[in-house]
Image (cartoon, rainbow, N blue to C red):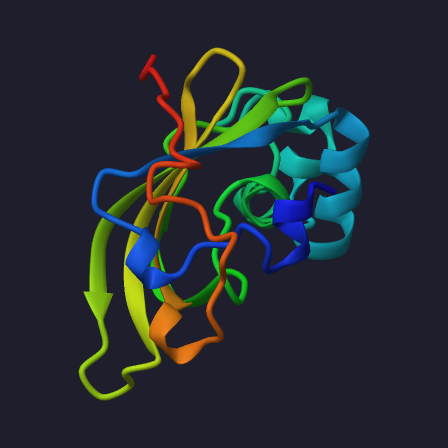
Length: 176
């Protein structure tokens, strides 16, 4: 795991974030075994467990549970996506799955800060609204998660002399 991901060295405070800032994660390739194992434990529906049983369904073949896609998204965000001070702490959001995740798909998360909101009642923190698009290897969006996240403010923490500039971790990500 990179130093940034261990929690504090390059993690960003609320003051480091601005609307339009983008981040991209590493990737994860999902296979049939992972899909079936997750489904057997958490979403045991035929279209997640059996390719033949899935053919006549809306999916037309084996598809990962949306919750499996969400779990992979979270793993990617935590390990290599949003480098937020204090971790990725959500207070709510909206999720949709415009396309199914299939065996062999390689998923990457592209996140964009939509809004930064300092708290009026809690000066040590604020909220950010982030649009996270989980994309497959063809650039197709398989999940959209708009999350409201709690982020600490620098003024409430000890000074961080090695804190990055606000553009230090911005990635230019071309939209497919």
